[in-house]
Length: 457
Image (tube, rainbow, N blue to C red):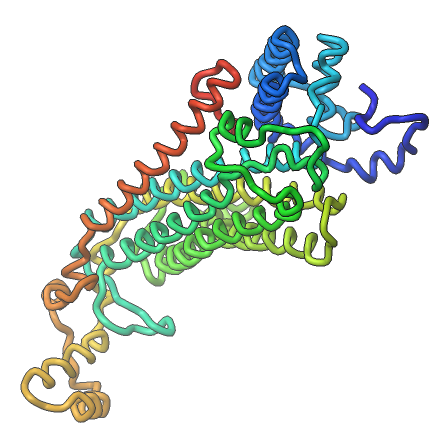
């Protein structure tokens, strides 16, 4: 169809290509979200008397058809459409004539895309939270399985103090659980509807924004119509920042595993199906997944920076610059989900070489243990420290398994309290499932489709 803003002239084709760029392709990701929001908007227009019951029925039928096409044969969005909003209205206008032209009443593409993005990001935050919790539980199971397998603890990459595989694995699990809490806080921020804010300044007709927000399962309306628009990019960056913390944790885990799977360490190894080869060196089994996990962490962090740099100097109200925040947020969300999923797969397949871990527990690892034995005998810590430090050749290797038994403080190797962490993760999973069930019920009521997900990957 013609562009929604089309009047008495045609846009230069080079300008069309420049201004649209890949937005019409990206909008395939937002299509179902936009259809869900359009259903809610149409029902609200019927409630306030803009649409008749018959018009509403036709529009909802057409919107159902769009979802069906998207999930089966595909729904086409062309460059000349500019975006999914135009493609949807064009489809409805072709099917139902004048009725289709009424769907945009009281709405701007500004609040339309905001609402589609808000729905998309709200669901993505829960989807990634669930995936991250699943990974955390995998790490906790791994920690339980190897809870008392000795492992050298390192600082500055040098041998430091006795540790365990359980302590090492559970540390990442607890970190991820805390990061899910941050993500769930972001989810609460995202759970407010901008629909009805129009082009930043509302409309001269009354729109029942609370009604449409409730239909979409939002917790509340985003109150100030100008803030609703100004928050575009800001909310995306906040979400990407939360995802970048998860990615940073995984990057550290990846770096550890790259080192600890080296033949020179030999603590762990990856199954061959999780490694790649070399085109010239036949012996190679490369940890490309771990290496790319580090770089994908950078991709997610840079996505947030791209969004922030795009919106940094914008004045209030809508500016077309916002369009260029869409790609990094979609890319960052998908990258984070894939990153968590592949790391869970690698930890699940990780092979532990207990003999190598025990062999790596050299005598110097027990220097501090010797200091504390002297402290227990009545000597001061500082004098004991100096005495041991000046005679390191006299430090003997302890039994690494016995060394772990003495570490009974909360969170230490012999008191990891793994069940507490598991319960915390399970409780968060329940919260995520409750939220997603609420969204699903709202989607079903609007579209008639059970178990509809806005994100199709």
